[in-house]
Image 1 (cartoon, rainbow, N blue to C red):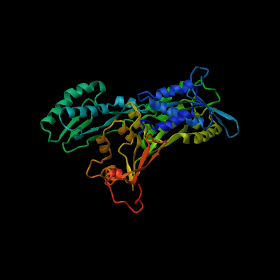
Image 2 (image 1 turned 180 degrees about the vertical axis):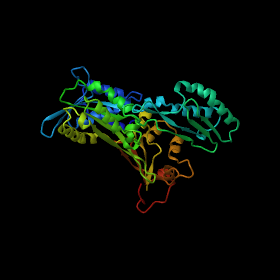
Image 3 (image 1 turned 90 degrees about the vertical axis):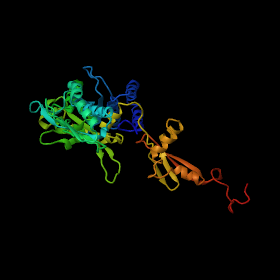
Length: 456
């Protein structure tokens, strides 16, 4: 599977599709950034698929300079219902919770717990961490903070308080133990239970928006205002805010409570305060959970937020907003089918490579066996061993089916046909072996049948 939200094949198809829209240097820059080895590739991915989608529903120019020298991502000309044209100038931004993660070092402490567990000879799965949070700052400008030591104090805290507790666990590994920190604005506990194997934890959500203005979405939108200020006075101005691992965008109204705000409310307040921007398009990936062990599927989700009526500019007429909405309805279905949520992709893109294949997934129907094409190629290339290949499929486990290739070979059957099935929304092919030809080349000699008698 790809490391991106979308398959590499689908992304390459969008690159191909933009070759007549973007200049050679613009397309080269996108390709170079996509081939980098860091998480910034996620923003370039969103830029690529959105530019391609818009190009399918109007005339698109990319990074066309404004009179003030700014070069926004989008200059999109669409047809209005009355036959005239409407120009939309916009910029694409990708928003994550990375800043909030840095302010709330839960992941760092969790890694330190695992490191100490390994150091003192206990299983990391024996631990459970529970962290409470508090709202800090004045009303309407507050944010949620996990009640953990400040990042600058963590090293000393671990050395002077946490490590001595691990010494006590090492000395009595069969006894349950609890560590609590309730001083200096801390409020968390760690439980050790030798009977646990999977561990885990719980914490107050620190990615909720307790303020309309102090959150990653508002900050990112505010950062784009100057980029669009020089747009023609009669053009609509839009910011396309894409999910780069931002819970506020991904959760929609699900994360809203009496004390918190949704992404729509944040965007509306931004538009109310910044009349130079007319609309915000929120872009994320929705997970579709299915019963009975069926794998989760994903689909794109969009929400167009326009400025409140009393805060709209002269540009944002009902007609222009209706024209924008209609054009987006044509453009956005051209985005590829997502294969994973953005937060997962953001994590994977920190590692190099093209993503994992479907090695280990297989199906059998009669004399047909279907396996991963890339997995087989890795085996033939010597990248993985036969033992790794068999283990990946579970054919070395007594509880599972035995190796079907070995069974067919044992019965003297040979391959009669090979078929490869490709999928644009996958970065692996399925290769199907039909093994139904009895052949003495792989079996003992037999007495000839009536049809074979006399043949040489």
